[in-house]
Image (cartoon, rainbow, N blue to C red):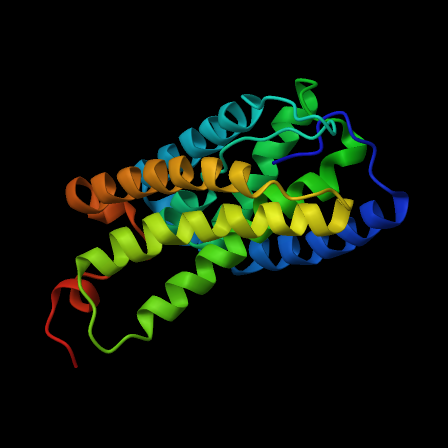
Length: 213
């Protein structure tokens, strides 16, 4: 969900900017750049992810209040690259949309807070909770984190957007968008985990396929 034609409150925009900027700075500092540069396959995947995110976010029907609703895809990016590079990819995708005129520069900070920071934070939290389980298996990662985690991520995004913008949350609309978000992310994560596990930075064979400790 992004602001579309809505004009955000200046105070809310400033709050979003001063929240997004430090997180982005921390992500840049802590991101595993050395590992990324050493693997051409992952560098290519990151570029593809940025392009896909920009395309996904541009396909957004406008709601009655002026805001636009779309799928996020950030859970997949978080699980593939880790939260640091996920924030980096999300910010770059947002800048691409500003350059092509799909997003207004004035809405960028709040859009990034809703579309990038919130879903990445929720996805990373769900992953951390899953990793604390004593007994895990592959389905915990693919369905628990991938499918359910992405549904929680977009649900949290819609709730935060509704709270900040003062708009009424349409529960039927929330349910309508949560399932396809979960299905698409869950399907992509399942496919990558099975056929290209080397791309999944957050996946651990020993944890999810090994014996419980």
